[in-house]
Structures are given as structure tokens and as C-alpha cells.
Length: 158
Image 1: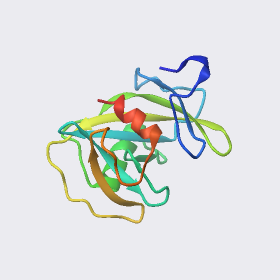
Image 2: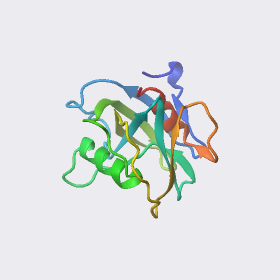
Image 3: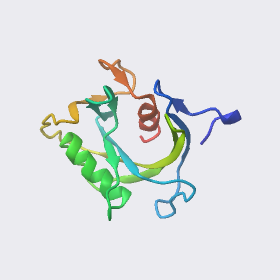
């Protein structure tokens, strides 16, 4: 999925661009740029879980860096638990690979996007990184800044 004329699918105020989003096989990751991160769209009652990152001051999908020896799927599960305390009811579904051009150095990276659902909300403890969590319906206004790149990906991970 890409916009015509090379327009990004989404952009944020920091100069980061979501260039493409490709559904496909988790077993054939893109080879033309690094894949250093994974995100999770966790759904409950038609709402997606968002976390408020203290450093970036924005609502984002939970996720983060793939550590040494870890698969993107393992990173997604770990980051979801670390950032939100939440767990999916079953295995996460692979949704696709998102291609970004990141500011300020214009480097290209991919991230793996996963989705899952949960019926039970677990207790959340704020951390040094994450101040709050919210279940978002993609329409309501959240207090503060919602990362447009993550909002785009959430909408495509239902």
C-alpha cells in the first residue's frame, strides 16, 4: 500500500514519514533496509491500546526495539508487556511491514506490525518510559498528541 506520486501514507511533526505498508508473509521480511522494531495493535471492545510515551510526549502503539537474538514477534510480545502490562488472549497475528523514512538523517527502516485482542484489562503501572495507557476508538480526541504514523497503522490492523 502506497500513495501515488510517492506521497507518504502518514507523516508526523518531527519529519518522520510512513512510506509504505505491505501485508504479506512474516517469514519473508524486507531485505532492503533494517527491521529494528515491532509494534502491537491490541484490541478490546473495538478500541486499540495506546501508550503515552513520556519522552516523545505522544500517544503511540506499544512496541519497540528488537533485541539481540530476538525475533520481531518476540519483541512485540515483550514490549507490549513491558510498556502496558497487557497480554493478548492468544498468539499475535502478523499484519505486515511498515517502511519509514526517519528524521533527522532520512534513514529508511521497517517495523513489523502485529495485532491481537484481549478481553481482560490488566493493571497498569506507570514506568520511566510510559506514563499512561488508553483504549482508543480511533476517533475520539485523546489529551495531547497522537502519533499519526501509529494511528494510520492501528486503523490498518483491525
